[in-house]
Length: 340
Image (cartoon, rainbow, N blue to C red; front, side, top):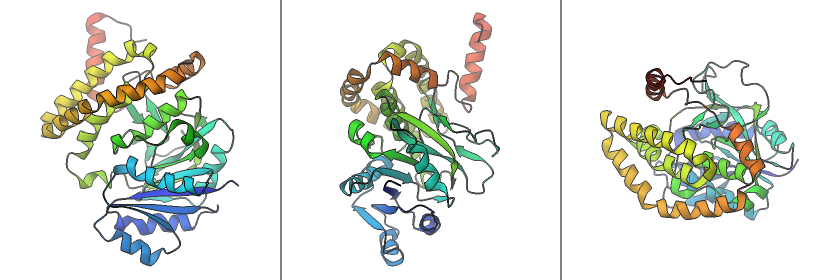
């Protein structure tokens, strides 16, 4: 089996590290663990050094977010010539066959650049993610989130995007398309890199027997307004960088409506300041994202690839977009448009 490194970003996750790392010790496949100590102030580094002397530790002096943090670990793995790099959340626990099943999935074809896991809640009762979807509204969402765990998602399949919380990446692909976009910091950086991979002709697969148990939201809950800020900031970048020109007339108007509604709802929830900060941060770096778009789209405007991506997209709203769904349905009733 080709060499695999498992990169774990950690920011103040001392309380969850033991269960996480012990589950990796029990893996049936040989691997190397790299923990990225991402500016923690809770004693995580000292805990790791004392209790897990065999793991490799990359120390960042400040919190670079998920994207910047895992990039540190990936570069460290690349220097050691690993063939594959798996990412794993510090608040997750892996089934003992997780890594072997995930690695088999990505090794199943030379054009497979990423494989992602079946991620379920820590009690094993509900789904967190079975891969991510991207909709014609410009909105990504985790497939199956909140649904009871059944055999509904137990088939190997191609998928639009992989969850960064428990996926494996081919180093050859990363050398071609680049690493995670550190400007995202957290949220949707995994969909961004998946989109770029698809545009470059790489396939992404879902491995249902690679099972992970995740404490959903354990990190994001630590910071007030974090989710609102990151969502408002990152969603436009995801679209601007990656959506092909031929799809913009269909996706952009819907996205602008959705993003405006998200912004308004943030104010109603008392998080208007975080939403406003997100808009400002997004706007400041839009010129940079437009430059990055030119590089991404110029190389990869291939009809066959674009048609494949369009087929992979969800042509509906995300399941949890209840207000948008009501608005859309009302529009259909008023205009008499056949939703089919």
